[in-house]
Image (cartoon, rainbow, N blue to C red; front, side, top):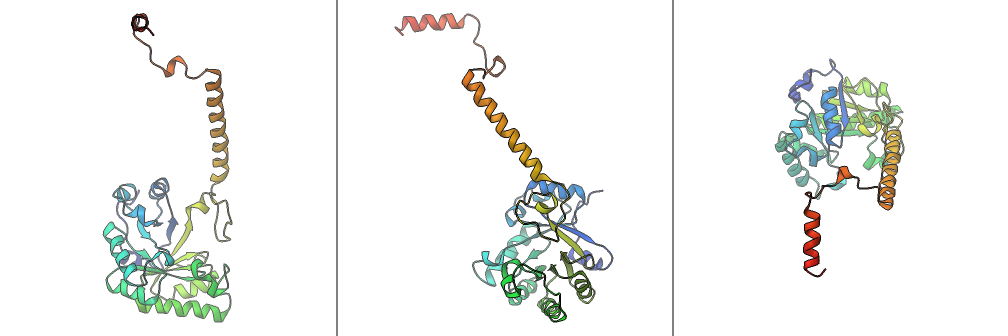
Length: 270
């Protein structure tokens, strides 16, 4: 049975250690509707989708998490706070924010449930050595843990932990009250998260190691593109040969009116 309302933050906290949530990044209405129908618990969504009035008609039971990339904000704290207010007014259940602890604390102080980010953080991964796993050594694992603790102190609700060894992520998850969202960090957290592009095989670029492809939409899109080209070519050829339009695609004049029309043309000297 599909949920008709999303869980609350209190519900999520109460389920820590008891229930594994599923989370997916979706970017289209079809994907959002599919997530609702499939029973996906949470969705990361573009802010512009969330503010559309039809969002809750499509996904009444999804725990919605809009995100704003760090460098998209006009300013550090106030801009994120204004954005967070706008998202909560639109019906967000939490917001993703990888800005400073100061910014997270300011948003949390105003009652906004904030999800931070530790481990491999794409937009700041130059500080951890690029696009590679984080926390493989005890020292680097401690840095992840210390950052989690800082998010706790800032009042965050949850944490995406990305490409951290599963055993390390599990130890961190059981030692923090935060809602821990695993992306490539194993099953020892509270939630597992993937992008729809990877699940559906739509990603034509690099497929992350942590992603699992469940369907091959890229091949289907290629097939549809070839069908599209063939249909366009057939239309073009029909136009050239005057095979299009056929009688079924046009309307007929009323019997006898063509002759009257020709007579009028002749009378006018045409």
